[in-house]
Amino acid sequence: MGIFTPYKRHANKFNYTPRYYDPNKEERERRRQELRGERLDDSGEYTPGKYIQAKRDARISRNAEQSKGGGNRMRMWAMGVGVMLLFLFIYILVPRIAAIVDIANDEKAPTSTQEAREVEEFDPYAPIIIVPNDYQEGDEIVIIEE
Image (tube, rainbow, N blue to C red; front, top):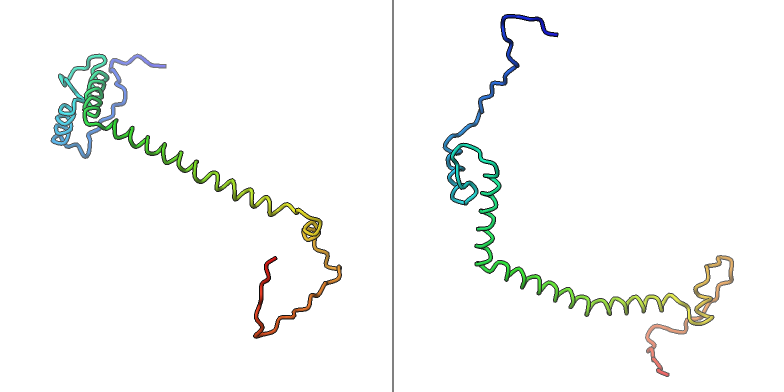
């Protein structure tokens, strides 16, 4: 509740002075933006859409320059080479990986009853079968193919 006073009270004001303000830098930035086409008119007064139009015009001119330079053409070539490498990878490596997986699956599955017995769980109380070793030092090993 305010009490009537003859003195008018003002709201609290914030008196800020920039500590690192460089007017030369501001002027350089303004000139660079004008040269790039980002700020077309800098009359000091704001007109609705002024900055949006300036950015749009700058974007259109930049895209026109890029299309003249062949940047899109190079990008398309790079994408084409990337797609070809992907197809080559799929064509060469995927069948090999599938073959390796098939071999691994074949090795895991026992095919005979003897292999099925080998796969059985280890029983520490089962009798141990000892096979004599007839090989002595100096003997030649002869491999007979059947």
